[in-house]
Image (cartoon, rainbow, N blue to C red; front, side, top):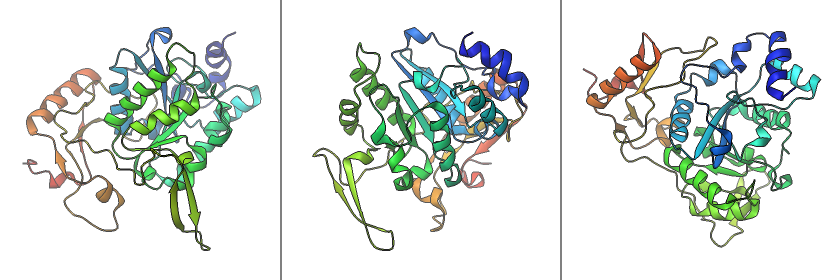
Amino acid sequence: MTLEQVILEEILPRVRRPARYLGTEWNAVRKNWGHAAVKMVFAFPDLYEVGMSHLGLQILYGLVNSREDFLMERVFAPALDMEGELRKNGLPLFSLESHRPLMDFDVIGFTLQYELTFTNVINMLDLAGIPYRAEDRRDHHPLVIAGGPTAFNPEPLAPFIDVFLIGEGEEGILEILEVVGEVKGDRSRACRSQLLERLLEVPGVYTPSFYRKEYTKDGKIKEVVTLHPRAPERVRRRVLDKLDTAYFPTSPLVPLAEAVHERGMLEVFRGCTRGCRFCQAGMIYRPVRERSPEVLLSQAGGIIQNTGFEEVSLVSLSSLDYSSIQ
């Protein structure tokens, strides 16, 4: 039996909420595996119902799969019963769409939304059979990347991540996958050392292995020393200039299992006008960039038509501050 048959016929009947692992949602994308030059799995280190409520997943999933030569599938942190079945039966963590082991992908991309999921990242790597530490990985292992708001403080996870993408991912993720495709060439897997060097060309990329951190006695960072001549001393975050022309999915995935939020989402703007010093999001998503009402109305119509949702929410850090809210 194939891994997919074992999962569908033997494992799923024994777990609660098997719909978390089917990958057959409305608007799910299933591409021809052999035709994709670069294969990436988007890893959300929390349960399905949490991750499926995340707008960033929907954006990057649709964006990457809009490219004919790229493939993106999904994986979430399995619930305890599913994790137990995987470990008991010696099965690897798998993607939803094709039920392939994570080891089969070229890139595993974790989104770091909150610090309490950091241990889930380590656990998912373990379930996938991938060495925890970046220094222990070889050419046959996938490239492990991470982004999201808590990637702005990458050092707690730096020993375990090959590459961080700092800032907004819409442009950076495509550039990373293009480099992976170029380095991979006709081989089955890219040369890791060559790949890490080439990724220095992508703005917003932080590669921990190209830096040495020196700490004070109380554990604070004293100095960061670059170990590669092309590694930037300061990594600049990626920022989208205009939201009106940026990619936005009007055919988002519709959850099979009940999710935390089940409705269409419109991102009215990024950033915040308030400038509260305690707010991480208000700082890292500056400056404020709005979508026009015309674009939002068009996106809302597409979402309703393509999903069947009866509600559309306005998503931002403070939607009532949208200048065209009336």
